[in-house]
Length: 380
Image 1 (cartoon, one colour):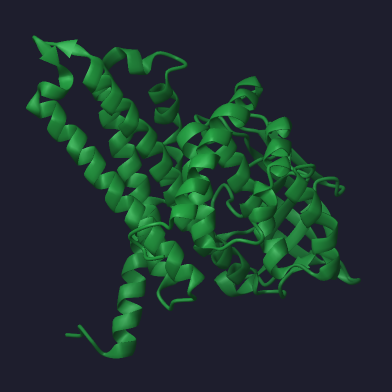
Image 2 (spheres, one colour):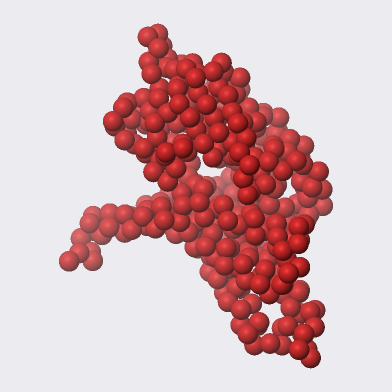
């Protein structure tokens, strides 16, 4: 496999995933309550073997899953991704006991996971988080503070929580904890957001955690967070590509059939050129996503920069493509229940979560200067 093409078996698998999403997952998504965890949908993802595959596959495989599901059912894509995001730190850094307790339940869809990094005053500047982990005088800590904009909160069964164990140490003083939802002192509130999937705030009132709840090492939790995001950022781009391809295909069908000005919309150069631009940008984003995922799977040195580029280009591209699709469809695309009305609501959030577009540009620039400072190239 190269970054520019997929093997026949990969293409066939993607087609099967799109069929699964359309025939089995879409009906379950339609029966769900927007803003709440759709447990039957999560369970079906588990029954199909896709949740377990989150922990046995590489970054490219994850991208193919997310792109294919997003094409036909964004709710299923998001449910899958949130399980992976919340539980990947357990898979990658958890103890044998932690993995044995939680990963089988996450994999079969009977436990819902969440990734709790963002705070009211620490969103894009994740290293500035202030949720405190105070030593309790025995063998653990007490977590006190708030988390905000947490997907699957407050309905998740387990949270990967990042808290400050060393005040004033920036990224070096953060520890990752695995916190079950039933811990005393942990409460949550749902937030009414534009995106249809559940997002909430969490309040920690002296929530007890011990050394058995640490993921990785104390004071090294920021590495856990960044390692997780480096894996999932290209796949956020894949989610965006899936939405862009769905919008593009809908636009091709509409402009081919819609009669206007004595012909069809496709006959108007201004329309056909817009469609060409949509296709061009979508394909460029797809290639960059696949390249970033391949770099991750090959343990390349430039993964953070590539992951940031892939997420940035793909999410900005999807916003453009969906917006153009809405414009070419006209008022019908704004009607509640239309595919493009749904995509228009879904496409906005990925430019913010897991690092806003501005954060991705900052990462790209830092990686460029870091590598040129090391090699001595391109220096004034």
